[in-house]
Image (cartoon, rainbow over all chains, first blue to last red; front, side, top):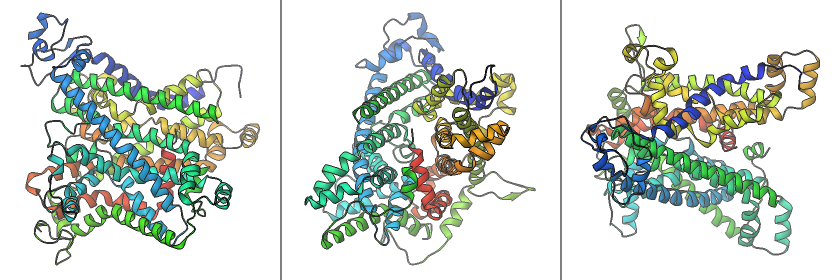
Length: 318
Length: 314
């Protein structure tokens, strides 16, 4: 296809995509990096940089100015400092997000594999089961969260009734209980995502060679041995792949928090993206929101690198 | 591709030899399927109860009568559907969502097809670099860049069209328009990549034959590349449709009132204090916004599942 003179056509055809990717992905990434140095807090002129941010190296003269002010890496320093409000908020959010990812990803993946194994059979009515397990993927998260809001209501909510059935009537209103709010988000996320991950396992299962199972059955391997020795190892690629999209997806899920736990102001259920939204549009702390976005980008960057590294090593192994 | 196989049920690969074991597995399947279906079943049933039913007293599932009152009240409390007024349709959550998703989809289908075509067909200077440049979008999702993107949208007409700030707030701001919700998604790395993969699957001989016959690029695209690639384009369309129909955070940031989509309408609806614990009313609203996609999914189950299978491709 290579021709001697420069052809402009491919660049022209690519221009729209390049333009929008530049405008809404590349440019904002750099903007956020540079804006994370800027202290700007329009809604709270009372807030003093030196007293509130406890920033080493910020000049005295900046105190009385509302900004925008260049404070360098002050926000990031405040994030790791033990007794700054930013530090407390940041550590809480990171802890919550970590717990959220660790709570949702493994369980929903195990459930997804189980679903896939159950649904990958030729039985009458299996289509309905597949429908019932997959529909949460298509359901808007706002709708799902609104329905689950009822499940978590005190006394007569279905979830609490289930607990009562087993003789337990302890914590009642899940979404405003500081200890349980995050878990209510985790439960909704597991319920919603398991069916989505199921389809990847289903595709993986259907690509497995039949003769291995026949040989194993001849050797007298029972279903459990077949599962742990053949199915799970052969699905390694699928598992790696699903875990990547699950983790990256978990960082981006906030809709359920907006519906369910927004009333919990103490921040026990705040996830990273939710906190970015919160800091920028509710607290109006622009600099902190930008700095949190930088942290988010850094986390996703590391995850992507880890993914590339793992995938390539696996290709090398095979 | 494995994706095609997933859509059709192939014979079981994992067998349970003993009949009681098979029944146990069936039972487990049924129990899990019912557990997973309870939320939507409950929501559907409760939405047909009278709006001011108190679920705390008595049954949380059934009431003594089946009625559409909750739906009527929900649509009267919030503008879910458009009304005919003064010779035109009023703004409603439905028209906003449809406008925004249709706009996104229309532009995306074009950019994605062209992008995939360029990367599959041409060799040019900087191809690799530009490919990774676009793939950046998959690494840094648009959703997390809401803070700087909000500024871009708000000041779009000032910066990019040169309209002074003093007048753009009223006349030319993109804020609170369907375009504001759609624009960040006009270029799609995922879609470009998906279409490139699909186009690479087209036999090279066919393309070369077309070139020899003197096809222009758009002839090649229309008559050689696109015909076998429709499934990928449809898959992309379905994924993008359900993604944007269900989207909440970005619309929450860039709309306030006029362009508010369904998801935001439901959020506002659930936060209205006087609705309180009127669950049947809230469930009616929930189903009003979820119904189109759910129905579409039930009808085109296979296409949806195989599309979502594409959505994970990286």
